[in-house]
Length: 372
Image 1: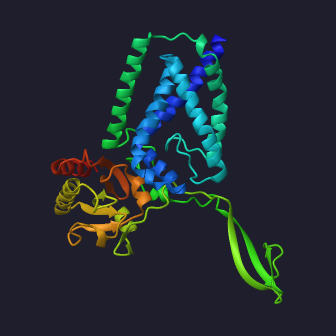
Image 2 (image 1 turned 135 degrees about the vertical axis):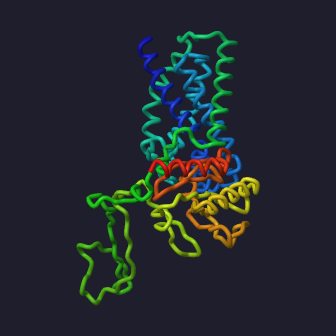
Image 3 (image 1 turned 120 degrees about the vertical axis):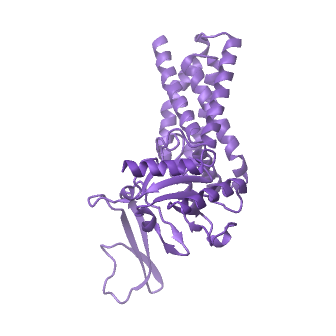
């Protein structure tokens, strides 16, 4: 019995600890995932609560796992686990059946699961969770009541501080394709032997007022008594998709992606999705850094999901380029955020909070040049 309980504690505890931790490492990513769900279910009025819900959910998830794994206030921990399972198992079944968002987001971007994989993961996890819940009175807590709650409280404070650290700066572990050291063009290549997407085509023809669907094996080719009406293509199997497949930068309607990625100069990209809504002090500091870069032979571009005509900055001095909002969110989790490139390789990433001063940027680019 004790061995079974111990194994169940390890399975449940580590799963909840891991799930809460990867969300805390990239809290902005889970905020975006919640907003995707809110959009899919037409409840976008909850968008304003997405950050609060992210902090609450991943903290409770982590504390539940911590409590069960280390047997600290075990009964409270297993109650949290069961409540999570009761709430999210039916929800994941609905998501699996409707598939409003392809990736569930339960393990952030660290481990991507389909909605069906998430549902079956929950079904499997229910077995040890229910066993622990049934035997909760047979498990003696490691610490007393006061020391147990004090320990959980301290862990909660540290964990929330960790979340805010990752929000203010950048995730301590970058699970996304645009991590430091990545060569962007290299991640956009599709191998020649990579599997291609397969589609099934259906043709709709009409004859004597009756419409009928055909496929490629039986459509009435050459039969003029049938009139072609429409064609439908359904994706049968996905092909290979490179890690970076949506990197496209436009300036006044012109594609300048290759120009930026092939430049032998250092290039500082300032990612600011909504220029007119951001804290202008942060924008001002970024533009001052950008002006310094241009004066010292470093290319500087502002990337926004808005067009340059909507930007509330001097577009005669600065190149304000348009880019897909989702891509901008994936490139850097800070808004504004910064990437330093050379020949398409990401050398450094910064949030608005730890953007180096001008002299430090000059030192970084000078030292790198001398090393080359």
